[in-house]
Length: 95
Image 1 (cartoon, rainbow, N blue to C red):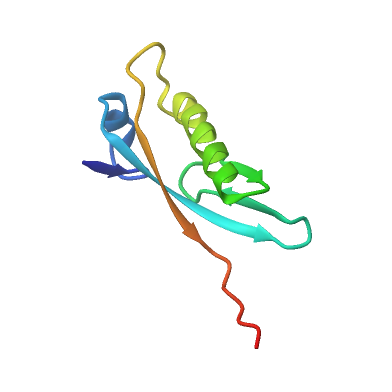
Image 2: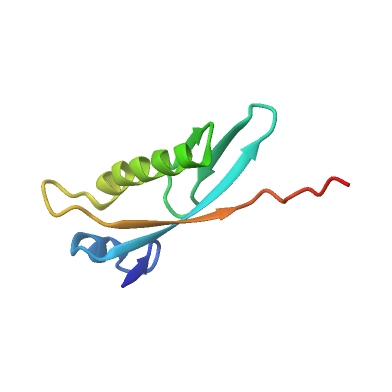
């Protein structure tokens, strides 16, 4: 069962061990040649990496830290978060 962050009582659900769905938007900065990710629902999520695999690892680590502070747990069971990645850059066809 997934419960979306931002719905009523999502923090209570997270404290009880329900998996929380976190929307993540992924962008590519062509000038800096890095991928970066933010979330419209989890404030403070802003990470970047050189590769998509690296970005996924960074996002998962940042979500764990942010969920710990957002939910306000101290020593309880680890909150499960399921990031849902959506890509916001548009593919370009070169003929």
